Amino acid sequence: MKPNRILPDLQCSLLCEDVKQESNGNFILIGVIGLVRVPQLPITAFKLCVFNRWVAGIGQFTEVVRLIAPDGNTVLRQNSVKFQLADPAQAMTTVSVMANVEFKDPGVYTVEILVDDVLKLRFPVPVVQVQPPQAGQGAAAPQG
Image (cartoon, rainbow, N blue to C red):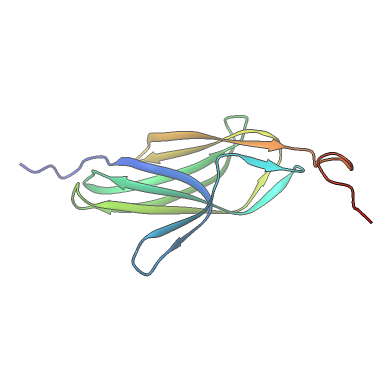
């Protein structure tokens, strides 16, 4: 008897600035993000994408991607998408786009990936405020 439902595995999940698809079907990830360094807060990210690739499943599923604030409770963004895998040898790529995400405070934000309410992955996205170099520090004086 062939199974009619197997929960898929999450092969990869990456936070990036944008995702493009070539004419041959391959994906190009632009600006893979592991850390957000900013000169001031609050700051708004025009566009963030979460690139997910699902494998080894059978059935219809609902993926949920959440961006959670440093307090661990506040959900800043949540995207949901339905997808289907007919055979365990198939793969499905999903891209969740989050527009105009405001980072109000420094700290560790979290991305969570769930499929059918099962948490598959949680990863940190530190947001760090850095001071720009002061005059005379790290920059050469102009020669005249």
